[in-house]
Image 1 (cartoon, one colour):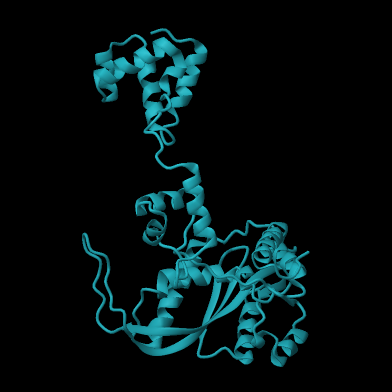
Image 2 (image 1 turned 90 degrees about the vertical axis):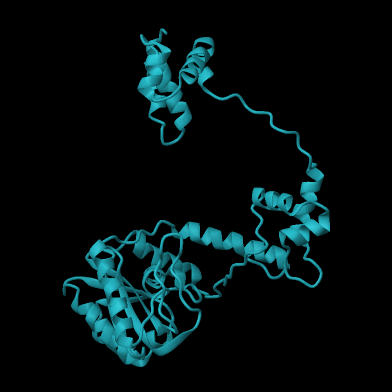
Length: 357
């Protein structure tokens, strides 16, 4: 086995692709090891068979580097014509079965004369999912563009000598106790719990996410009136150095615009509010924290009283703050607006209503 300097460099590069293509990496190592060694020695060193070593040595000698790659496989001939596939796609997108809202693989199979597994393969290939549905709401806010640019600008290019907080309330968190004890996970068996539960009251969570550090200031309250919100604003202000401005991102909840809140803002001019557009609370970064809190600490919990629920919430907040990992906003305002525009045009096209500039 004789290698040129270029071939050796290319083979070494291929050996480093073990995480991408393990087969090619092994073949490259076999060829490199074959220089000055027998098939038996290489097989023992690389823990493979002598037949495998002989095969790829021969492939390399005959075709050099090209010999290490697999030839395209022809496979079995297709039994379903393109016209049939197109008919299934059109039927899926433009019709529904009689008396039903959406197709299943078996109802489509009955309607087309194909097998349900064939329908499944066609749907997977073209990413059709009739069984799924997602909700949406286009914001009618007349200041939509300005508010998106304002809030996203705070995330991606925060002002100097200022701290940015994403603030919101998660209201009516229920203390739910499962009707029977939760059975823990075991080998071959997931955790099990009853579907019914006993309610033990609710509480509201006020949370302020420091956008720069990811730290969350959280307080549990019995309610979320304007006075409670003002008290929470005082706590936020107390955590920030007096020389820094405070920018607060929040939604359009009535408690955020109540007279006590407006009076407090007049007395504390360094605190500035930035409202998200109507029906666009997803723009508030603290909502991501609420999602993780629900998924990791509340959804599978069982709490016999409000004290246990409060302790579980604050324990998760403490663990989150110990990790010290901030959320990173990656979408620009232009990208968000362009996505919304294209989505609006699609909705408009489907229903043939109005005009979206």
